[in-house]
Length: 253
Image 1 (cartoon, helix red, strand yellow):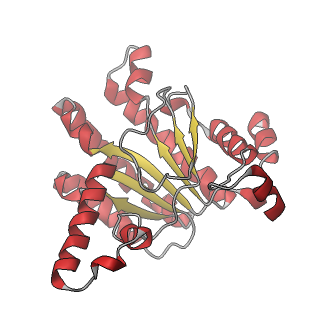
Image 2 (cartoon, helix red, strand yellow):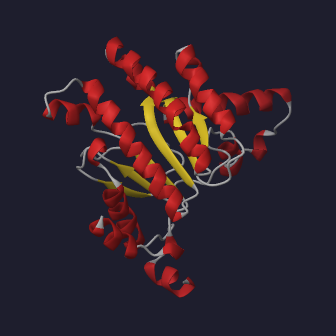
């Protein structure tokens, strides 16, 4: 606890990332290292979701987006997929009162029509129950991939051009972003990936063009508030230039 507080004291509250996105990787390996079934890793991973949500809310971060289940994850063994869907629905239902208590709004993005009805209904109930909350927006990316999202955006824009609602000359970065699943939130300032792999895995590819990337070998179930604080501290030590020179950034600060 003292270690965590020391790290929190090092965080500059005036320079917090507004939006943090996390690739929660390593549940299966965490379980395997302990001789447990992979599903036990996912169960333990729920605790890390709670810790990340609590710290984000306590610090005043506006958006937390979690890569919970990719479109590629449907290719995993059916037993694991079924267990994950059940766990996600049950966990969100159980956490709904605390989300409301902490003023956290649940948001969902992804091809949700592919999800089992029971899990989908539980998630939607929580989303509706927290719709009035004005604090942290916690987004779960479920049955999501960035390529899916981009293709869907292209389809929407093409339909609007065909109907005459949009002129081809009006298509630019801003218009395209308005047709993404994340259109109502800013791009992530910080992307964290746990588990030791240094790749993006088809996650928010458009949105992370200028995000700071933080990779850690810590497996997701072991990623607590102290590890989250480490990521924020490193983020604050970086210089975000957005294509400018370091001298230009320093002159503007």
